[in-house]
Amino acid sequence: QVQLVESGGGLAQAGGSLRLSCVASGRSFSTYAMAWFRQAPGKERAFVATIRKDGGSTYYADSVKGRFTISRDNAKNTVYLQMNNLSPDDTAVYYCAADGTQFPSDYLPGYDYWGQGTQVTVSS
Image 1 (cartoon, rainbow, N blue to C red):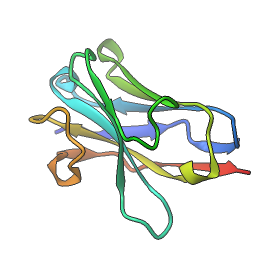
Image 2: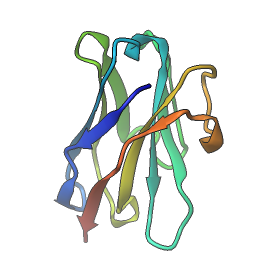
Image 3: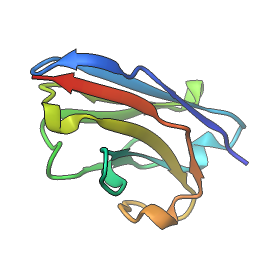
Image 4: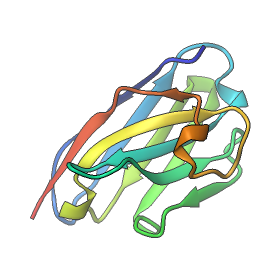
């Protein structure tokens, strides 16, 4: 069992930056690929980025490529999402998720564990 807790969301202006964190409980964090998804109001939850269990490879949605960076610190059981050059289209609840079997994967049902989400709001 893995419990995930996100933090770092908030209000940012267009062009600004935010850094999200997701801390995992348990001692098996390094065996999971980790990912970030987001859900905007009235829309389905969508893939943002994923990182291999050893941190050696990453994969991004086209909409965030070049602006967002996913990273992890296995010693701290934490995955991060650095978000730069934010736009109002990035406004959403952001969720971290863990997948014990697949990488890279943007397939939402394949992720085993989910956090409760953190709100990111970008004003124009």
